Length: 248
Image (cartoon, rainbow, N blue to C red):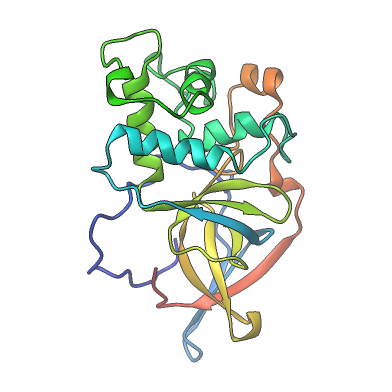
């Protein structure tokens, strides 16, 4: 990760993104220009953000509010449309709001994780769900576990869409025109904000991009859903710069 000074006065920070391997275990390529106080890092560019939806969810938000936001965001996509990296938008959306915590999605997933079918039932069902509808002890729906995962992922974050069609979760301060990039040697994609005509970039924060944050899904899942497309081999390398002591 680059060296920047975070705003330590912030409270109720979003939960950390649980894992990432967007760089594909690559080696960082960087240089420091002390005279100009900038850090130059090599990476790959993901097209800019052109849509974003922000919620007011916090870690204390009730279950009904979590499901309401999830349903509202789900309306922003066409579930039957194809996702840019393969599979459907519906599957990409579910994987995004669950931060990838889905049985069979990642090669190291645990048996306790819920299936894509379980998540689909809760995320793409009627909006008139009440607290009484959430069966904490139910092994069939696993509603409580799914809602808790979604709350962790969505709290203080925004859903975004890129020009090319990627979707993901990023800091709530994201704006249209922000750039997404995967830096060599950096586990998580970054949201960067162009400054000074694009010569420098302010670091907005890390993000989760469906099929980009974790390019090592289990072979079975990839074969069935065709969700994997390693963009590191598809996009030319670029060099970007940002102020060394930028902030969130």
